[in-house]
Length: 495
Image (cartoon, rainbow, N blue to C red; front, side, top):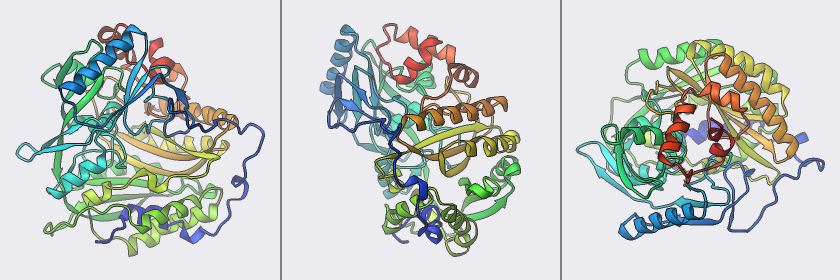
């Protein structure tokens, strides 16, 4: 198996047909209204993946080693000092959230970077440090023949951060990542270090799951794993208006599907008019699985090719033709579960200093997904945001986390926009986001919380039935509001 992942092959190479196309009106920044963020080398100004959230903190502490008695005492002392000085605290890892959810303004921000993994092959679990990146998890599990049960679709992020936003991925049939966590160790606002699970301190365990770090600082986790497997893809064209029911039928009604996702044509002249479903099943031969490759030359080349879509329908046409027509014929060979997961988000990173990549995600019931796509066809083209990709995933119901986004089967629509770094672009994005959220809520769905804080407070309340119970639980456990971030300050504090 080559050093190039299949994901990079399909995601990036499809744009090579149109890669020569120029960027046209997106190449040069327009002076008026573009000054939004001034880069700084100040170590106490932190930002997140949006590059639009520069935030001054009082302290930035990186944890690099496994917690022991000394480092646990140091964490407890910092929390006590922060409380005495009315300084907020929050823990982070890669800070891939996009609205200040992983930064404590004027407070102490921890970067968790303690990277360790211990396997329990008897119970099919692993223990790991809160800051361990998924790339490390994959490397260790892969060598032993195992794979993460659920993780985000890229390997750059910290495990506890994934639990704290209760992210999902495209392994099936699973709900969000929290459904695969067995237990956590977490330090609460009063300095207690407690073990939590569904059987012990369950209220803490479930409120911290998708609790955005507002319940306490997680130090380690025990998580389920599954066997790695050699998988073979199947490609199916679908009418976008029927994608939701067909996607669920394929996953639930077809045996042995382990991974699944969908893509849509984002060309402006045929916007969201075609969809492709890709499912992966085990092959008959599961012997001698190759090591999961990292990013090879094709993954690196994919960045330039992917970026050629910016402002170019020619490139978007080329990418869709490759991804939906040529790619399945020439690139449909087998791969492994870990190879599919072992891709960093930085592979497709935007290096344009005048623009940034912004994610959106909406959760819609399968039967209403066609109506949501119809709304997207009206809302997105009326904005100045440039949609570069839409990935569709299935999410099983989650009735555990207090801020759950999938009380029933959901189709997740993950959208990647390229946005100008400007005040005018932010206001345009805010308008578009609120319109998309309104459409999702009208259809009984909701939106995802780790991204730009563009939702109105009433939209948060309408999309998350657990908002007020969560806020009450947080206040009961942390009455002095030690753990705070922009999500709390902007929304939850009002509940």
